[in-house]
Amino acid sequence: MNRKRQLIILSLISCLSLLYSNDIQKISQDYVQIVNLWINAEDSYGITLQKVADIDRTLDQLPDSLDKFYWKSRTALLRGQIWFFQEEKKKSIRELEKSQELAKISLDYENYSEGWRLISDAGSFIMLQKGVGYIISHSSDVQKQAEKALELDSTNARAALIVAQGLMNAPRLFGGNKEKGIEMLIDLSRSDNLSDEDRYFILSALGDAFVAIGRTDDAIRNYRMMLSLYPGSTFIQGKLENLQ
View 1: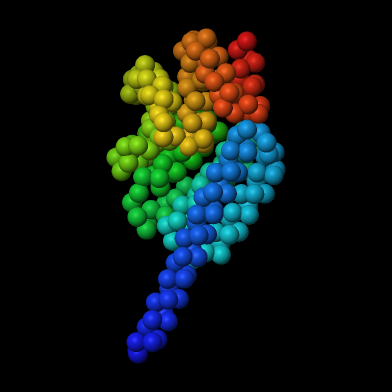
View 2: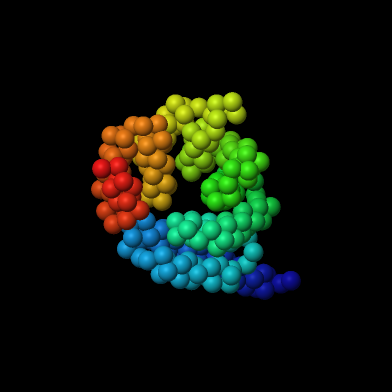
């Protein structure tokens, strides 16, 4: 191959890499905006699902890669969460299981923290919908996956959230420790490096934890703080109204 042809090929590869990088960056930006509008109830769940489908169509045009399967796993997880809050159990579980499968494919490219977190996160929402028997047989797997994510990245807040919730919910006989779990949630809520999505789920879990141990005043303060951050969230408004 002559020098000129080599330069042309290298130039084409460079251009394709740049275009791919720009696509992933835009997907990331679009995803953040979609989640923020959903959390704050500025978009209905129907509009949110349409926007997520637009991201998936873009992803489907990209070559297979870790980034592609990572983002497809995240969009499936988001759909699963949306259907969960809409109490559409079958639709939610279908998307959550899809998210797990896509995350597993992404882990074939690299053993990375967020891949394990996605599998664990989807699993935690599946457990909430499949009942006690499923929880007993799968809770240890969900915890191990979250712990694996933390081994690979100790700053993975969502993985730490899953571990904290496991400590809160498990019987002491099986390693549960409500005091330690709530301390973890409080520490996580004080982090300065949280995305809006992470902060929302961590604060929501903290409020629920306060309710579970009878610290109603703390739960009310927590939900009021959440409403100052997400004033349109009807979900948090409902939680607060139930306590007042």
